[in-house]
Amino acid sequence: ETGVTQSPTHLIKTRGQQVTLRCSSQSGHNTVSWYQQALGQGPQFIFQYYREEENGRGNFPPRFSGLQFPNYSSELNVNALELDDSALYLCASSLPGASSYEQYFGPGTRLTVT
Amino acid sequence: QQQVKQSPQSLIVQKGGISIINCAYENTAFDYFPWYQQFPGKGPALLIAIRPDVSEKKEGRFTISFNKSAKQFSLHIMDSQPGDSATYFCAAETQGAQKLVFGQGTRLTINP
Image 1 (tube, rainbow over the protein chains, first blue to last red):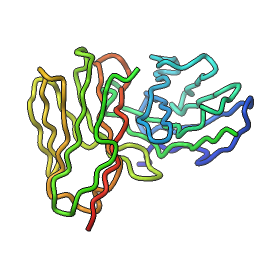
Image 2 (cartoon, chains in turn brown, green):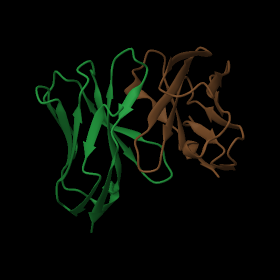
Image 3 (cartoon, rainbow over the protein chains, first blue to last red):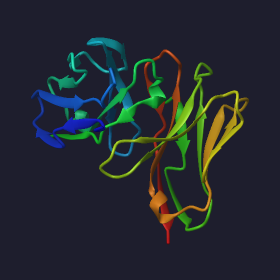
């Protein structure tokens, strides 16, 4: 059984560009959440996807958007990148009916915006 | 908006000592309080969690103490080992809210 995987591992983008980050959930997990972890800070909830629909959103602007696919994998898209978007982006998946604290995190994608 | 405050920011403990990390929360709707451990290059991993109707929970060398009236909870790591060196996050969850609220993190270093 593989855990949560994310790609790419690292990414460098220029301000104003767009980026897509990918996440493959753990086997059997149908719920995927995305978090932003700025350097030296705790993760902040961006949004959650369940059955291909957004199922809760944190305090992030609309230029942060996502998708979930029938195989439960997910994408995080960020448009019009800003310098403050530089962070580790974490994906977490959980089993049907599980609480948020029972989710499993991937290793993250380190995004640097210059 | 910081709903969970964690301290200290960094902590150095000698091998065999007790590591103590504290958290305070504001939102009384929180109903689950997990702790996560994060190593460099890895995502956070669940360590131990407690509900507010329990004052203490112990799993191996890790203990959570919970003070509902003070809205505070803490993680104690007994007999700390160099392998415990990591960043620790407290968090809080409101059932049905689909999200975790994390503290700022504590970088723990255990000196051999």
